[in-house]
Image (cartoon, rainbow, N blue to C red):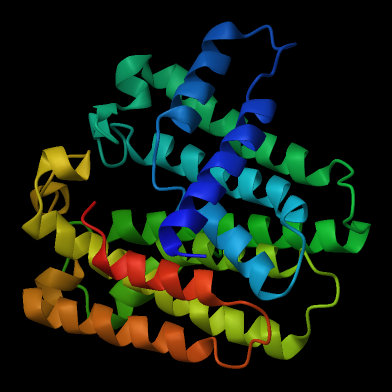
Length: 295
């Protein structure tokens, strides 16, 4: 299957799962539900759900076993974007070409929408899922919680905020982005791997190396695009990191150095997949997409 066919298949499948789990028909807080849906349904590349499906495919798991993990990880990602855009953090007015949640609604509603999306993700993963054992689901919950909190995404965002207006070295920057961006990408890949209860340690190790490489490559490419692209193409404010005086791979390595870094990480990701016995073509295609994307 080509990447374009695979991504279309993922998007269509994910849209059905998302529609089912964003109805929340019994919720009384209509404005909060509206803000949650606005944040989940306003497009996006859906890279993390695609990684869940692609990793599941690479370990010969059934696609339906990846549906709930894919939805849960995107809920966590959506919540993080809502909170990142708030005035207390990045203070962004645009996300995916549309007003950010706190602009469309208000700051209090945006905070609550992020909070509710986060808890909804774990509510989704903790309910019985046909075809998955309790241990598999517990593994997924542990992966998602660990990589979303202090030791993952939230910790990385804190490191990011602490680095504003400060000179940091490359080791600090990589550690920050391994947490802020890479951790949730790692969770996506390993949750997909746990969709098969018989995935072995060699496969998990290979997928971990792959995920760590593409997680960092994703951020390097973001930093490059923040310099070479424009607001309309990006769907968010171009040059925002420079305006906030945040350290980036471009500011530390230069534009060409950042491009070389992305290329090297891309190759590391491809090399990591060699031990896998399942179909890893989709994972390779996603790695190719991550460093060639324009937004």
